[in-house]
Image: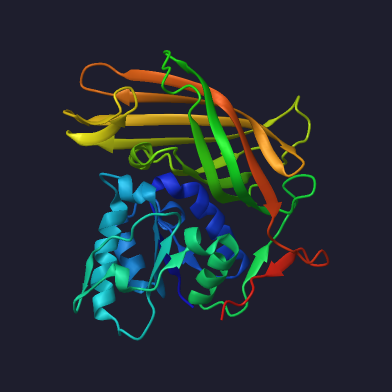
Length: 337
């Protein structure tokens, strides 16, 4: 069996690493530029040959991909569509995967169809467990195996569901009274253990009004992946663990954003770049992950950078979602037929 080509943007590397580990456990050969381009080779030629020679082409779409102004993943997409047009229509080769609530690009694949006409693996809609099962079956794994590993915390397996919760801003520097007291609702997500014994979380949020939600979506703040180098969620308030993420987005001149100070949408007349660093410090309190957070945002402009830091608290419900077999340490994804 030849390989499955995995296409993604660098901002999604943490989650792609986790999916690659699942592929390895199920003996699914895959190709990705991080591991499979030989030193000294012409990398564009290597990628083209890998796409043409693959049993499957897997596009890991996300809001990070959607928001990137420039990424070679778009060039890979062009090569893959050209290959798709050469292949039989009744044979699955191009597999779109939605890592979050993103849009599939409306790109033509010929005969009046676009990429949106292809059946999609949707982790945001189906959930992690069902989504992984569908994904592995699409790659030819008849009976998928998903390794459980060590528990995330007391009373939790190595995979858990994030339910409803709150992220509340308590202070800002410089002072921004309209931000203090702002509450983002956590509407779902999951947390899982990685091959490196780290913890990876996917979190979905909803702003208190539609205008701010649209602005958060532009800044990539409505959904995000966060990772912890710690191996266990503690119960001791004196030694919380840390989850963090960084994201950067570029916006062309005249991009519109919601201004909380004026209650209006404002168009920025020049190009800007936003860089956000976020760290959450938390513990497991019965069935909730709770603690404090700090964030730092830098907006680069043609004149001078604008910086703001925020701090506050959060609480998110956590519940087990898998039932591993303790005798073998693995479980099999349920059939969705």
